[in-house]
Length: 618
Image 1 (cartoon, rainbow, N blue to C red):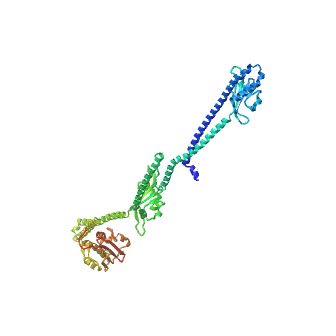
Image 2: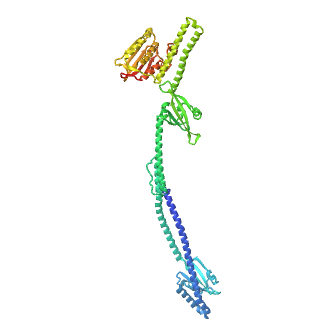
Image 3: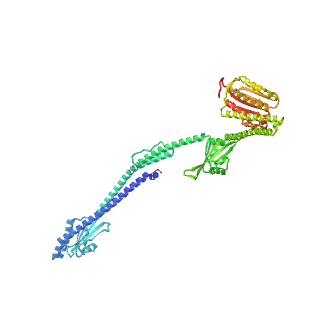
């Protein structure tokens, strides 16, 4: 497998290409060289044999055939001529692997240089080259392979410079030496090619390594970067293009590392922001499946993390998918939902605002998800409801006495003023309603000053026992009228406190007044002062009255809230007493709480910090 991977590598491909290029070049050079050398040697061999044949023809013509033509004893001298020609050829040319034949004009072989062919002397030859030469044709040569697979060259030249041909010279020469020489040269070329290929392959390995080694390092670094390791860098070996690639890769890794670091920081910031937001955030994909939900959203919706992911947002918000689509794609992208809370009767009111996430460059249809922002507006809704109720109550409280005053004044204007019995009663009712409105406005102004922190607290050292006794004395007449017993209890260890005496008296007057109003005749009221936790003073006003229903107790300190509205109004109450008491106690830094059982009685306890002696505070 390792070898297969090597042949699939760039280095192997470079080596193979390099070797193939050298091999092709060497083959082309060798083929051209071999063909050129073969042609040259053959031409040289042909020219040498042809020149040799022409030389023999000239010499034979001048020295032998002309003399034999003039000789009277031609027959007697033919044997001697053959021997002379044979001697001439052998002694002068020594042809070796070459056979030289001298042929007369009739085609009869006069002489041969080859001893093995002595039997053809004085016999007529029929070779084509000889026949053409006897006809005076000068160029008669050919290459052929003999019966013994010997490659030979044959040529025939006419003898005679005149019109008449006196004979011919026929030469047959072996070409095996030439072909052996060419074979040796071919072997040399093959060996040289193999040596060159081996050297080229080795050089290719070295050269390709200089190219592929940086590429391998870049590949390794890219793999490490893909696995999250950005601390390593590529070694740069020179100034070529691959080295520039290495520089660029290192620069890219540094920039990528910086970008990822910035991205991680931004991600951590975003996660921190989402985690610590007061608003809940839910993110979904394009199908509405929840992909992200911060901790505040889980707290608001009362769900666990493992139950939120991969659920549709409509299931978490208690809305239908059609409603979700309307809020996402419609003009109104906000709604209010009620989320039930454990152990709490009233549900939590949550405002949900929907925002779409679009693909970059495609705002119209490229929606990739939804962002839903959840805000707990329970208190805001309560405040808004309280504001509406406050306005309605003030309007009602003012309209009722004004209507009464107007009615009685109109009656007086119509003639009741002259009636000695009705006029005083009408005026008395008008005065009472006016005083009622004055009390209402006074209480509202008092509350306004407390709300805006404009009410100054003049604190002084106050003895708690004296303060409680004075409260009992102020209500002694009302207590005797209803035969209600009152008891003051101050536990040991209660020290004088630094409080605003007038305002605390107002709190006590309000609580005792309510206790008297709602306690039947011959009931009992207890005012108790004790040391609370830490540096606190706890004062409790407890009665044995009719009590307050459970459903009304959470709102008993709200402004204008009355348990029995008709009865409270008839008793002259404005519905602001307990609200004022709560604000005064809060201004002192304390708390107030109410406990009640219908038919048994009510107990109101408020705490005050016990400050050191002295001064006044605002």
